Length: 366
Image (cartoon, rainbow, N blue to C red; front, top):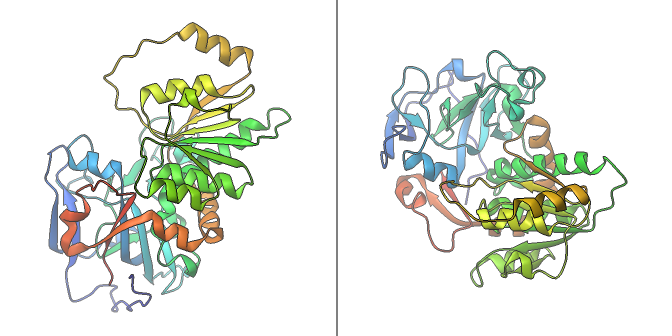
């Protein structure tokens, strides 16, 4: 269980002991290691000093560990990973937050130019790709005992989320998806009733949660026929399906596609109801060709006024929406999404995927 207490920082904001940090050498496969005696986070990283409670692990982390991508901060050869954070404030000289406040750190920061979108706080819609991201691109991540961040990138959480606040980052992603779905929907009179979510991983399940919070009829499709996924979907009052998309006996008004599987992506675009909206939230790996009738797809999209769009990342507005959604949710259900909690001294186990994993969390405080 995550400790609910916090320790006050010393006069300089530091501690006697060194900082443990999970790091990789970007671009080098299987370079994951736990550094036991790292320096305290530099004040230049931000005014708010935070004691890490936990970090969540997702497919992005596994891809970085595999050497597929990742970028160390300028002048460094290793990257501290971890972008799904939960911590407690130790100090904030700005007075924005108080010691003991529960917080998560926003992952993406705007580019330095800035582009049109980053200039107004919409760094999730960055137009030139020069943004930075904690634990992914040019900013140290949150998988370390203590980290710093500027107040405007720290999101305060309701104390009720002390055990599950680490889910905030993935929830922010689907909060953005729903925000954009609703903005697109209001191009005309819009009264959606049925939602299809494809993929019952953390993103899919959280997308389904936000759908049920909107009072919609939610269906979740996944390949698994046993394990925790069907029960988690039932716990939302949603309906679980383990059949091909084309075998579903309904046409959804809204689809949130979270698998990135090419055949599923194409099938849901064809399955949506007239004036339907399909949000692509899963990322395909590429390198695979599929024969399909592009003309028929074009005809359906045009004649039925359907919309297909992609969505990734989130800005602060979406992080706030996500925090509110999690605070309203059944905390027992949210806890059940976290299928493994692993102490940091067993970090390698946390980054080794298990067959029934939904969300694995690496815990720093105990």
